Length: 506
Image (tube, rainbow, N blue to C red; front, side):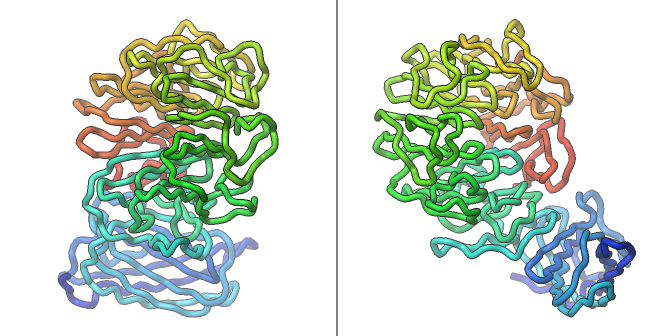
């Protein structure tokens, strides 16, 4: 590690009170000398009484920062008590090239000036984007890292991606786990509850797979142990208490696969048994009743191979090629027009199914011949067949008979009201709701038939659809995301709707 000259910048921190709300105004004056590498962003972190606020200026590094310079940062709400300040200089490739700290005490409505000298030390590490506020962090479990915001650069390519409602997680080829986006419920498994705009490493533990739910996530380590974290309001983390907990260990593995839904989770063990837990209002746990369960409970049957669970319903395939669905059927998402809901698995016609995915109102599944079939609600064209019944948003009813989507498909994923899939030629297509650009075709117009995602010449390996954002892994191991970016879930370091695929910070 090479050390550069010590003096990099001097920053003054000023808090002003100008309204009954006593918003905090942070004024940072900075300067650098000629010995410092080019600075493209400054990140200011303020820790005050267990609350951590972060701001990066500018939010997107587009040009070298001019110095000397002054920046005004606004944080809502009053501040008082001890204050710890960290200012970091960031290069154009998201590396830290300097940092400094200071501390002081703030009186409500008063002013505090803190001078910071940033040591021009080159620190190899990827940098998170600006945070939206949060708490002081939670204790790590299992002896793992607490998820520091600045992690050593992995250098390893991405190998797997999972998309939640407003968050995303991915595993690299070195088995490290990285998460970004919304962290309101601790669903990133990182310190505090602040959002992250680019990938941050969760821990050095070796992970085999990860899956994201609406406000929680679960991961299986390479030794088969299962851990879940985030919102636990319905017991969806697999613990005996319904209190919100940062992370839990789900017992009685080893586990093979995991599928968090909105407020429930289901997982398959290596022995082929299927277990579900969490909210059960509509029988989506498949246990024969509507009683919520905070402990994993076995679903009848054996030989399960893959499971997918959404807000209202759950579907799973077996090793013999059969497909089973249960839960609410208000939009025919169970492919059975005769029931309003089902509390135990019911078979969908056919015995050659390979993969199933569940959206908010619809279900899609592939067969051994690579054909793709969708059924259920079609509020935005998410069934992918232009002749299918289109319903107004919120209306009940749908297609109980699976309709075929043209093409040969190798991988599929269902978002809230849209669907994406990769064809056998490695091209990527999406259809359904596009109000946030989640189809990736450069528009916000919904489509009832597949439209190509626009990245010239790219070959795709897998796709993951969230509520309104999509991420896909290319065959060259680069990761791309698009759509809603209100909480930084695209991992690009900036905010705003993204209508075309943008590469995630590597």
